[in-house]
Length: 404
Image (cartoon, rainbow, N blue to C red; front, side, top):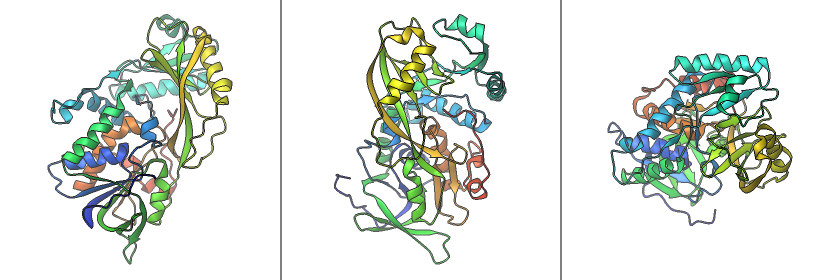
């Protein structure tokens, strides 16, 4: 970390958040914005340039196509928040109003078993009011004739509040508005925590610059580094950094309509992105990586992404790579779902971790929910208890089938 370390203004805070990217900014803003909370908030961010954080590498996508009702509800609120962002920000005329580009997700099934899962997911989503439709091969061909549908038996698609948005606007204004409401952001790093004699409370955090800061509540908003923060409190969680690749490309023959975010059976996905197109995929060998490993493997584009894209959309046989980058998922190895809430023993340690690629779209609802938990001792807007940490301790997976 090349930036000078900043000392906190005070020696004690009601809430200390370890990590100041999307979730540190979301939770702190929701806290500061709530008139029922009048406490002090400190957000400690080890790299305020955010150069390598997951927030900076996101594709800012949003979908309602999940297999669990609560994940559908969480993203539905995310869409509502984005569409009414300026209103949520107090109708501040400085705040821009982002849009959701609702191209939808197109989950392609190449076998009857997966098509059956899609049909079951569609029922769950429809019961929540989502616009997901199950499409036959002929229906896909009629709506999007550019696909090569060899081997495809069906798909799910939703054109309502599903696509991508300008997540950077949310991030920027949560930080800016939070500061104006009294949230203190500092460039520093939490390097240790001290618990009380019984181990039931984190009494203080130690900063890299040497200060010891007393705290009422500690919130782990450390993204892929969540396990490092948890270990300072003597806690283990199944979260690790997994590398994911993004590719921006142009087409010699652009499509005559928007390309939905298409999830190909190969594991490669692709969508429209303004005048360009955006694709992505995991590596075939998908281990945990070092926290600072952002080295790009260019063979993934040549050997996996490009062939899959050209196969699914023959019109994309002539494409040009414009930009590419690797980012990290904060991957929950137990069940690829968020880990939220209080620790069962260290009662003032709160998790907001393990989003496994869903973090950006879930940040409005999860930030609101964690702020409610801190202020009221319970979730009030949405029941987020299925994500609570206790399941990790019990090794009870809350499986989300729709993970990209």
